[in-house]
Length: 185
Length: 317
Image (cartoon, rainbow over all chains, first blue to last red; front, side):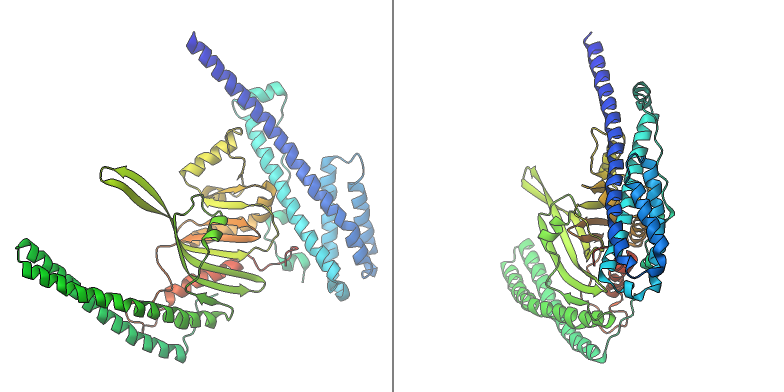
């Protein structure tokens, strides 16, 4: 009788542990995504300053600047889904990268200290977002393993937890960061 | 950097002077030890054969030997100091003018502790041969460190103290090229850390929340990473950085440990040999005299380039 009671208590404790573990892992994923959101917000906040600094020098890049401003407006708009926000960020990233390449044609801008500071901050934000995305993917992988493997899959089925999709790693995130490549100097 | 360094004619002259000093030291050491060994033998035979006079003679012979060895200790210290400052120092500046050697300084014990490279605190600590330099915007320094902890066991005859190495080798530190606020530590994977990492991965409630699961398989096979900021750890340990640390680890004879703390990076290299020391029983006048020392220097110097620490494209300049 005592043995049965001990086994029952042990099973109950293991069950509680697995249940709590699944909840923690799911929360961890949500937390990791909100970290990406914070980083994106930080990056979007750089754009007005960047556009303002750059447009004084870059007379021929008006279209690019307008496009970047529009994309930022969309990304910060209400009712933008998480995946749309990430897609918009990728478009902004590509547009700003193109802008950085064009800086070559504007020597005065290249020498502007405010622009150089913004350029460094932008690069830093790119790496921070990449780190946040990797952190998210790691949390998703841990969560998925827990949801799909025994005995977690039994509880996941009861809770209605489904495996999640990891974010695709951009090619730039896999590459070695090179000042030359980034700034095309 | 290659190990290309030059020994000027002025340094060659110093080596010739030091060679004379070395021979004098060797001769004194031979005299001192011969006297001690002879004395001990006489004393031993005297005791065994109950020959009091022979034992006294043996004891008397030991004394001048001990005095000779005691008196040359200052000469040995001066010989070592001159070699380090005037020969190794000159070779370093022939490689890079910013490189300097301070034989009497090292990595402070407080800095070693705060680097968090190792979990065990040292009970005995010694350090020497501090080499400093700057490459571009990156300043770095490294020194030989011997950190030990002790274990005590109560035996019948009293307490027995045993000393164990935490690190015998070199600690390298450089200004890191990115800003960060937290602490990230990369340690070689041993049995205990493997178990800890497994628990943190598979049993959330019992695992170490500070373990960072990284995606580079080779890196994760060799190291366990701990950090109080999961995102910052990945900001520091980019995929490219992990590859470079793997390469660095492969080039090192023993597994390295790294930490990123207070905007600096620290790397501990366990080594079997004491570097930057002059030979006493071998001649100084041989062409490969400094080859081992300079290859260690080249290894340390290359870290800044290998890890791209001079790339200052982030806000930290």
